Image 1 (spheres, helix red, strand yellow):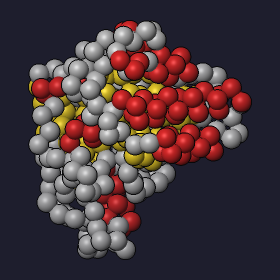
Image 2 (image 1 turned 90 degrees about the horizontal axis):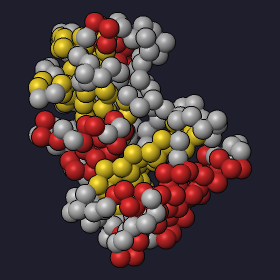
Image 3 (image 1 turned 180 degrees about the vertical axis):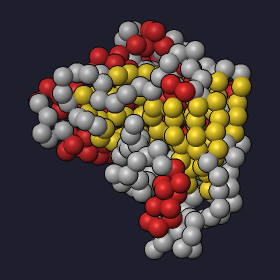
Image 4 (image 1 turned 30 degrees about the vertical axis):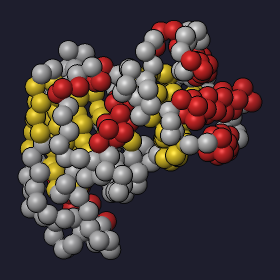
Length: 297
């Protein structure tokens, strides 16, 4: 049993060719020690995703990019553009749209170890591409994903199943800060249970088919006092096929998740990026985590 640790994303606004070049150089620097072919694939994906945003998603969009364990890079390109009406044609490189809307996606898919896209007329496009620097296997699992900006490491090497101990360590780690909110979850697929505590304004919900259950939040702020705020470890059902969604107050608290069942058929990282695009407040840091039960319902 281990903790879910992922690096924070770099969020790059893509509005012109200079932005596309900056993304390509960033990814190229991460791939300096990779084989020449792997570095070329990563730079190609960066170029194609950014170019699509510049040409078709007026006034541009965003690419969230980060190195991912153990040896690769993850791209999430999102926009509020016109969307792609004929996605199969675009993925085959024969887009009939004016200007070749979406045509670069065929090259992105060929260069990627892991690829997913969600799009439609009038609702923009979100693309996930993971490029491996190694043997071609996807560099990250597909049962979890997220969009994150800044995460404090408080678990260390201690037992992650000790939620009470984690609360105390988190409170101690935040004593020299302005304080913070925290939700911690222990997922036990074999027992079909989820155990958690939630302090402050990190919201969470579990979706299982048509059912949607919210995590109960306790008032308070970690780090302000020697003793942590009073809270309890609670539990919720965690059946096969369920998805857990956690998000900070950089996103609207009123997410309508159950009405977006189609979105949750996609890779969890793509789900997180789409929720971030649709609900970010743009004036605060935002983190979204989506975890899917490893067994299908």
